[in-house]
Image (tube, rainbow, N blue to C red; front, side, top):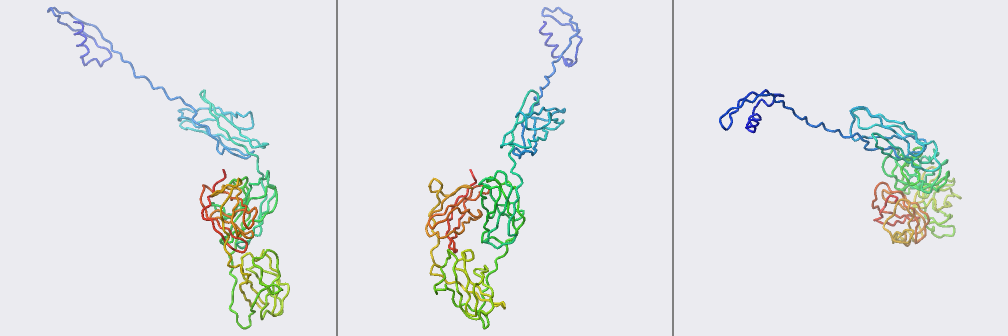
Length: 445
């Protein structure tokens, strides 16, 4: 009977109420009746309240994480979620001193991170790592930064401020703190952000002067030289802008009556000029209508001072510095401005074979297909002649350490960005050219 009563009770729609009064007559199995009355109170268990995710520190970072001594940087603390109320994160320099930073950082409601300024020691004896930590809610996380010895503020300049392609730029520097053999200078268009065009290493001294050859193929324009430290790409000094001028072709006028005319150029003994020159040599140009008053003489566009001048003969002293564009041209300009040019006649070597390259070899003597920036390699071959230039397409000029007829020792220029394969051109003194199509230029290791 009681089971039937409970079943009826649970089926009653009014069970939604907090309490129910019951007054009911139930017929028993034997036909008798029983009156049931009372009050039933219904209680419910509420759903459990979700436990919030603990508020924790996710990361601690420092940016930049490499600075010079005395420079400041920024530490950022990031939480795993944004807090509903402002929280205080404890900050601590964990290196036993050296760094300066606030003792706490406030992260505002709704924000997931906050930052503090971090000061570094004014001086350090050597490059040194420092560390800091952030603590909150029983948890700590840290970060480190490298404080480097300052390189100082070197003075840096170039001269001349106007030059032709193929000429040398003189680099002058001083007050270079802790100089290294990997300090280097690159030439860039003013304000340019791409790769360097011409370059060279310095000599590891705090002050000095060195030449930097501007490629003979360099386009006219305005450029600047930038000084870098220890094989890196952080600019520590820039030169004043300088100009690479356009190359003016040597005029070759058609001889007409009244113009000077060169008939031959030879040594005082009557021998052909010994091209390519390896030492200064006296040359005598003979012809007609030179005039009795000395005028001007150029070899390959370079002015040469005459040592003697007459109506039919002009003597000059030619040197390798002014005649490397073998076999070259000589131009004679009379006092009245009338000029004549002719190709210099050599000793039969004008048609000599180009330099023949057999391969590249590293310091261990192993043949390699390329090299990393700053690496010393030896180019082997034959007929390499006298020292000239080695250039790579989009790689600049290779620094020549030594040059013989069968081997050239070079220093690979710093690689810009990722490794790439470039073509190399070896130009021997006098203009003979050899080519190597597949040199792999790699960043320093």
